[in-house]
Image (cartoon, rainbow, N blue to C red; front, side, top):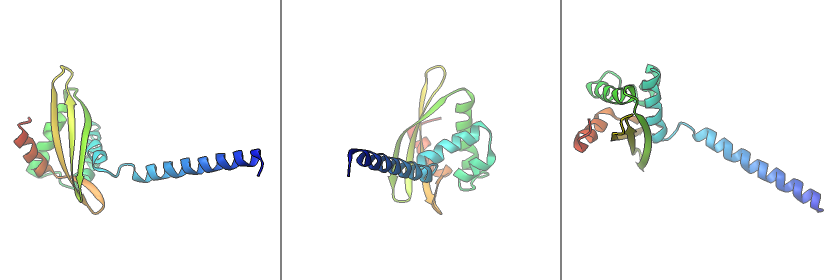
Length: 138
C-alpha cells in the first residue's frame, strides 16, 4: 500500500468514526433525565402544554404538578436563568439538580426527581416537591 492509499484509508476511517459518533449522539439526544428537565423548562417558557405533559408522564392536573409548574414558571417569569448542575442516576430513578440565577443575583437550587417509565424519563412532581420542602426552597 502506498502513502496515498494509506491516507485515503485513514480519511475514510476517520469519517466513518465521526459519522458513527454523530449517529449515536442523535439517537441519545433528548433521552436522559437532564434532557427531560430541560424540556420541562422549555415547555413552561413557550408555553407548550404537550411538552410539559410528555416530561411529566401526563401528570399535569394533580395538585403537586400544578404547584411545581407554578413555582418553576415564577422563577422563569422573573428572568431567572437555569442550569443543570448535577445528575445522579440509580437504575430507573434520577435526581437532577438545577440552579436558578435571578437577574438580581439570587440563586436557588432545585432538585428534580425523575423516574424512567416506558423508556422515557419523567418528572415525579410529588417527590420533587417533597425534596424542595426538605431543602427549604420556595
